[in-house]
Amino acid sequence: MKLNDHILLWNHVFIQVMDVRHKKMSKGEELRSYSLPASAFLYTLRGSARVRLDDSIHKVERFHVLEYYIILYKATLALTCRKEIAQLLEKENPFQNQYAFAPHYPLPLYDKVKLLEQEWREASGLGKLHVKALFQQLVYELLQQLYRQGIEPLKPDLVSQAVAYIREYSSRSMTLESIAEELECSTGHLSRLFKNKMHTSPIHYLGQVRIDRAVQLLMQTDATLQEIAESVGYPDAHSLSRSFKKYKGLSPVRFKKERQHHVRKQDQDMPQTLLTYALQQTPFTRYTDIDYQYRYNAEGDLFMHGRVKITAMMIMLCLSLMLGACSAPANTNGSSQTEANPTTTSSNGDGQVTVQAKTRTVSTLKGDVEVPANPKRVASDQYMGHLLKLGIIPVGVRS
Image (cartoon, rainbow, N blue to C red; front, side):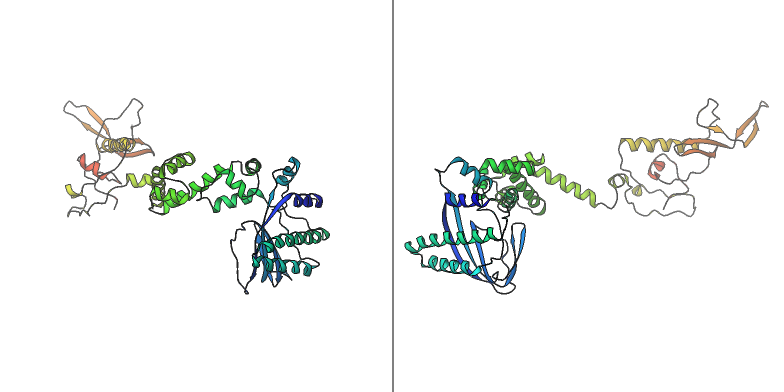
């Protein structure tokens, strides 16, 4: 910002000194998350420290922190000022700019700050008037040394300040006008900058912050919707539910149920499909003295859980096993079952010789399988319950 514009704005604003404080900090002491209630000058006397203003970090030495003065003030533009002055203030606003430097002539500044603090403590009407005069002298000396050293003030990011303010005070009643007033800018200027950088409006962003906080409370606590609404900044549960549907597309109750179902599904040791169709546990069933004969116990019957598609597949497999267990004449019409080379012959009473095959080939989903033409025993890898219901007693099963 040009020096002439800076001086012009200082000459057209009404200055109100809000507070003057003198503070001594012990070694290692920290002052965290302090929001300045107004514009301020921080003048430090001795020691060294790191000062963070918004996202800017300044390392200060010599006439710096451990002992410091802070002067809080507020600059207000007169209502009768020219339009170009108001536009210049909105565009530049030197009362929000940040700058940090070690003055070449610190003692003149120290004398004015010390006297300013003493007059402020007296709290008399005449003393207050003297405070304003001393403050103007301090600003003159400060600006003179600032521009002599060629220090360029750092213009703060208005959008970053708005985001930080919204996130910190989202639970309070807040409007676009109150945000702009807190940041000392117009609502139009704030909305324009916010949309260009965040691609949304400040109020829409405020709603998103509140709903994100509501989601955390909804999933991590057993608080009621009314309690959550009051905590995040809504007047009642109805307002929270309406805004929740706007941002999440679901009501809070339904959102919680679906999120919990999703979490439970991810925590399973097995995929959900395997859990759905897995066999239920049954008591251990012993074998008889005849190894190939399986003792059937009605109470130990095995059940399957499946859907229509799975049931159809099981029926097809059972039919394949039944066809493999039963003898059938050779299929000569080009079907999936064909005779193998080994054959046997037999004659009937009329003297006719009949040729019978010992094995046959059955087409399955995994390829052609050669099985005996007249099987006597069946081994099963699964589906034992269905085989038993069909009257087929397998001689071998999976443990």
